[in-house]
Structures are given as C-alpha cells and as structure tokens.
Length: 372
Image 1 (tube, rainbow, N blue to C red):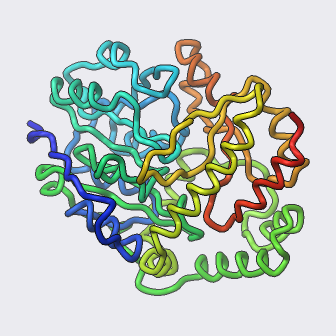
Image 2 (image 1 turned 90 degrees about the vertical axis):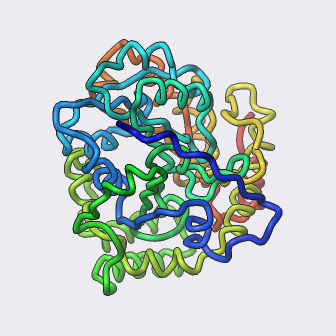
C-alpha cells in the first residue's frame, strides 16, 4: 500500500536564494541522493518498491532509453498517449491501467511543468500507484514555490543537462515509504577521486575553448579525444543505460557545489526570450511555450514546425550548432500507429540551445540573418 501522496512544500522566490545548485536541491527536498545517471537513479528508487511482472505507464513522447531501468527491474512498460499540449491523455492512461500497474510517470518537458498535472495526480492516487516525476530537463525550475521533480512519490533530474559536466543526476524520495525502502546501489553517490573521464572532459572543453568553439573544428576535436571516434551510430538503449551505472564524477560534484543557480536561471531565461523575439514573427513555426513563468529555468527553446529540415538548415547556415529534433523514440512507439501524435511531435519539435554560456547578442545576430 502506498502512503498518502506527499504534500507540496511552498517556498518563496523572493526570500534569500541558495548559493549553489546543491543548496537549491536541499532547500526544496529533504531526501536527495546523487548519481551519475538519472536512469540509474530511477532503478534504485524503484527497486525496493516493485516486483517483476508488474507494469509501469510512461508517456509515448519519451527518449528510448528511459524504459531501460523498468525493464531491468522486470517490469512491463506500457506507453500512454499525450494531448496536443503535452498533457497526459487521462482516458488512455485509465484504459491501460490494471491491478498490476505499480507506477505512472509524468514528465516536465523542456524545463516547464507538466500540463494537466492536478488531474493526473488525482488519477494516480485513485489507483494507488506510485507517481514518478521525471524532471530530467529542469533541475532548478520552480513552479509556484515547488521544485519540479518533487511532486511525485519519487523523482529524478539530470544535472548534466544544466551544467557543463560529464554526468550527474539526482533521485528525490518525496514519500516516507519510498525513502524507507531505498537501498542505494554501488552506482549511488560521488566517486572518491578524479578519473580519466574527468580529465578527458576537461581537456575537450579546454581545447574547444581555445579554438573559439568553431563547430567544424570542435567536432574534430571531439573525435580525437573521444575513445568512440567519429562513428555516427548511437549505442542501443540498453548499452547507454548500463554505461550510466556509475556514481557521479568528482568533477561534476565539484561544479554542482560551486555553480550559481540564480545567474544560470537568469541567463537561460534571457536567451529563451531572445529566441522568442525572433520566432514570434515567423509564420512557419509555433513556439511551444509563449509564457515564461517566474522560477522556470528552460532547458532549451522548443518550437514546432511542419518544415523541420528546412528550419534546421537555415539555422545551421546562420551558425547555430546544436539545434535538433527531439527525442529518439522507442521503437515500440515509433512503429505503432496508435502513437501517431508522439511520432509527429518527434519529427516536428525542434530544440534550440539557451545554455548560460551563450550571449544573447549571438542569438539576436542569428535573427538578423535568418530567412523569414
């Protein structure tokens, strides 16, 4: 039996702000654990709560490897449909639920809170399931006084999607039962020493900086330093998942403990608004989020277009390196016409960089050159 759903703690953004990322997490959650990978964290968070043969429901619009920790635990993964605004399709969720459903996942896409979350949480409570709050995109996004990722019985967030670090993730245990059953594995915590991966990451970053981040040269440097070479192939989801079963690197922990969350949030919001000013005047694209509420730290600038390849080519011609469609869907979803909306979204949604190391003037210069 799952305990009563955790209450939402309300904090004011107008009060004294935490001085680093770690203090943000500890301010809003009483039980956090560090990991190298969010998927590895999810495995640990669920391992003492579920039994092989049960099932978990996750949204169809989701990267392919997210299912791996569930499969590793012997759970069946059932994908549910989404509404056009990325809210859960509650009727479809209810249709897929049964007595063996142990958990249901919601997702805070691109750093913004999951639409329709109130109704979703009511449904989870009604069927006595665990609520997994997937907050991979938004480690420091705060919505109405609550840190995203802490609204479920357990949640995860990915620090490496916010900071220039080789890895890093957090497991939130927001419920007494979840916290009681957590037995951290060998891949929990932080590594005791700096390793070869830390050195490789630092070297790559330093060389790229010296070369002024020229996209072409930077990619060549990546190939020289990265042991995997220039192969464009992406490992299978299970391989990527297994590679993530390691504690957080010492380098990542060092950066997390020193990074300024207020400066990062402000910079990303400014860059988001710069992109928004550009695309508000383009008729061939739709901005996914017109509003940028206080406290939200966007991971990217997402937009939707029926001509994604042309927009990507235009952006590349203007010097934008890193814009891409999102995500790489599970083959279970991609090959099933029942999930046509998720497939369409994965082809039409583009994400543009807003990270804190971009100067807004650089984005504005792209707008001056971008065809209308």
